[in-house]
Image 1 (tube, rainbow, N blue to C red):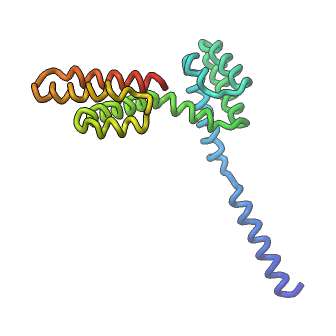
Image 2 (image 1 turned 30 degrees about the horizontal axis):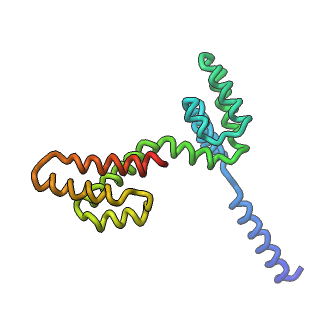
Image 3 (image 1 turned 180 degrees about the vertical axis):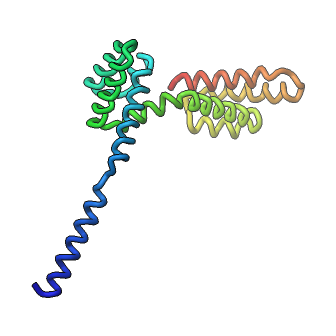
Length: 183
């Protein structure tokens, strides 16, 4: 073998070793991933039935979750079964499950954000009047423009007279009924 061929062979073996390093996953990483799947499985087991129905869970995993519910008083059996659930989850795509769990866990925060957005829309209608109503109508053409205009006029009169904000509450109630309850 000449020196060029030898160098090529060495560089190829070096490239192969780099490829092997990229694919290498340590035992600790595998263990952490397995424990994370078991924790996700435990969250699924602890979910109420109504919320569990919202999560896209394969049939085999759903059967295992139902069995875990029956093993509630048998601690060691439940611990082993949770390991089994983690093992099942290694063979499925858990991303849709994680996404559904994230949405369930943050449902309250999302509702608060929607509520605050409605408050801001109401405040803009009271403050800016027709321009804010037109902007809202562009997004939601099914709203009653005349009703919103009347309430906006009433709200500005109430604010000027230092009266309770009845019209402002009516605007908020109407927006909540039309925009949030229709979702």
